[in-house]
Length: 232
Ligand SMILES: CC(C)(COP(=O)(O)OP(=O)(O)OC[C@H]1O[C@@H](n2cnc3c(N)ncnc32)[C@H](O)[C@@H]1OP(=O)(O)O)[C@@H](O)C(=O)NCCC(=O)NCCS
Image 1 (cartoon, rainbow, N blue to C red):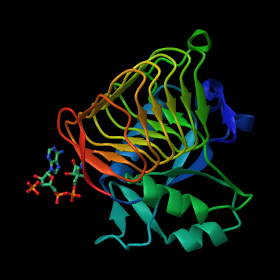
Image 2 (cartoon, protein in one colour):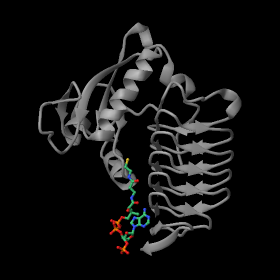
Image 3 (cartoon, helix red, strand yellow):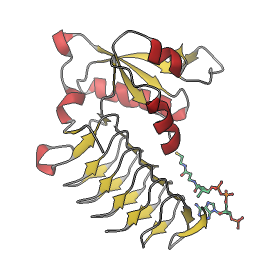
Image 4 (tube, rainbow, N blue to C red):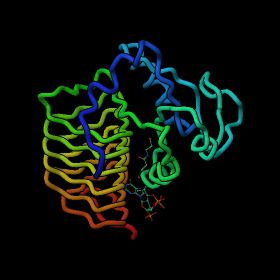
């Protein structure tokens, strides 16, 4: 994992010179519109984001998405010379990593965006990487590390000493127990649980509603209670 930092102040900081900071969302689907809502909620709490619109390789059915314009493809975003903050709202771990790999341009930045009601205090000793998205209702306790571009969808919980490496994705109401470790790109479906101290291998998917009670190897899909592999 790289570029870890306390993100608390970056997200809610007053914009430099009092001017709103331009921000665009990559992904014009449902998660993109939910991320736009997150930005609106952050702004209501004092953040200064100027939300410009959506980029997506798939042109939406209409030029306006959730009240904001469609701005073009990922390639157009990478080629644009304008300094811009970017939120990558792609739900799949692999899809998000693929988009990020195409956005390595010095004028683009990737702030961690955390819902304003999610507690993120210095005494919790949380470390978040760039590009993390943490939605409403999430609870993180203490001594937790989130790598780069980790997605915590609505209402997830993450316990003490847990590590979620780069590009991990938790769908709504997923739970990660104390000391659990999710390797790069692990994906937890809606309501999935990884109990304390369990390690989930890189790019493994834990299906909706599953409970991982033992370590899972990399690159598999596991479902059920307890979670068992259904495919490699
Ligand atoms: C686990 C998952 C990734 C498997 O998807 P898939 O590879 O396309 O697998 P299939 O749908 O072909 O299902 C394969 C088998 O596993 C079963 N299965 C699939 N998901 C399951 C789940 N979550 N729990 C229990 N069994 C499941 C299917 O019933 C099927 O069983 P069968 O062969 O006896 O008929 C998917 O079902 C899932 O749970 N995704 C999470 C989605 C989610 O939470 N999205 C959030 C959006 S906000």
